[in-house]
Length: 241
Image (cartoon, rainbow, N blue to C red; front, side):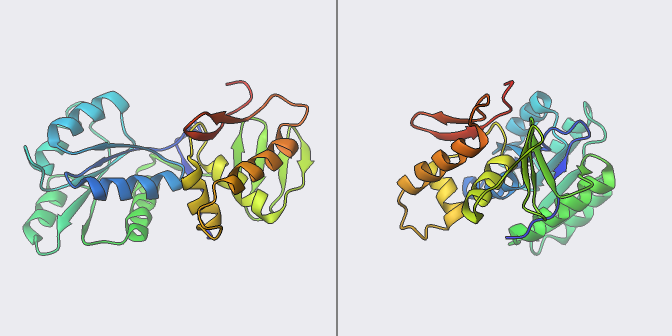
C-alpha cells in the first residue's frame, strides 16, 4: 500500500500523539493506524487521564473526543493548554452535535471530524494539521533512516553503512514495516497482518523464516539491528542502542 512520506518531529524522532476517547475499541483502532504512520501513540479514556498523559509525554498533537466520562473535551483542552499553549487539537464529535463543533473551534480547537469517520480521513487531517502548525516535518525524500540503515520507498534501494543490500520484494516489505516502527516491538501476528495479510493462514513460522533472511543480509558481519524479544516479537533498533 502506497503511503505518503513519513512525518517526524524536527529532531527526527517520531511524532507523539495523544488519543483521548472513552471507547477502548476506538482508541485501539486509532493507535493501530497512527503507529503504522510511524508515530508514538498514548491513549487515555477520561479527561483526568488525558491531562496526566499530556503532562508526561508533551504530545505534538491531540485527538480529543468531546464527550468524556468526567469532563468534556473543551475542559481537557483548556487544562492541557495552561501548560502547553500551542499543542494542536483535533476534536471528535457526534454527527449531529453542531454546537460541539462550533464550540470546539471557537474555543481554540484546530479541526474536527464527526463520528463515524474513516481512519484514512483522520490520518489525512492529522498530517495536514501537523504540517500547518509546524509540529511535524515531512522528509524531503522517500527514505526511511534508522541508524546507518537507509531504505528508499520509491527506488526500493537499501543501504547499510553505505553498502547496498539487495532484497526480495517480501524482504523489502518486511524491512519497511520494521523501519516504519523503529524501537517498537512488533508481534508475529502484527507482521503477518501487515506484510502478508494472513495469506499464509496465520503461520507464524513464515515470519521467523523471513526475519532470518533479513538478518543474513542486514546484520551479517555487523552489529545487529534486528532483535528477538522472546514471547513478544521483533524490534529494529540502531546498532548503537
